[in-house]
Amino acid sequence: MDAIETGRLTLRNFRKGDATDLLAYLRQPRASCFFSLKLDDLHEAEAEAEARSRSDEHIAVCLRSTDKLIGDVFCILEPPDTYSVGWNFNADFAGAGFATEAARSLFEYLFSVKQARRLYGYVEENNIASQRLCERLGMRMEGLFKEFTSFEKDDEGAPIFVNTMQYAILRKEWVALRLRDRT
Image: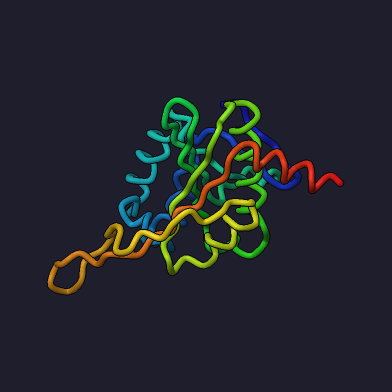
């Protein structure tokens, strides 16, 4: 994909050189849904950065001033016109609005360039920060899936199931929000 620049960020394809910064936030993923992406060392991070560089599904989010990787957003096409979306950011950069800025740019790109009709994302019930981000983006909660999925196990090896919310937004809702914000 072509890089997208915002006031403070650049959204671009991953590069092998992003490995150190990728390891910084995937060594200890904050959200349980990213436990499967946990990286243990720089070698694993280099392989993951290389794999991501060959796809437009995972998009690196970098500080525009330094090109430092601070997180990523993802968008997975479900033909013909729906995308599953999400984000994962380094905790050292939390609270500055970077996730909101990146996700807004991703949504605008998907709706205007890729002609997406619908975007949706899953958020664990205990991930309040991502729930709030979904709401700031104009997404609505469509449902709560009780004991929907498991990302970890208890001491006896039994899966721990988590409740998961689904948020979504349609292109026509996004356009209406953008128009309202301009007036």
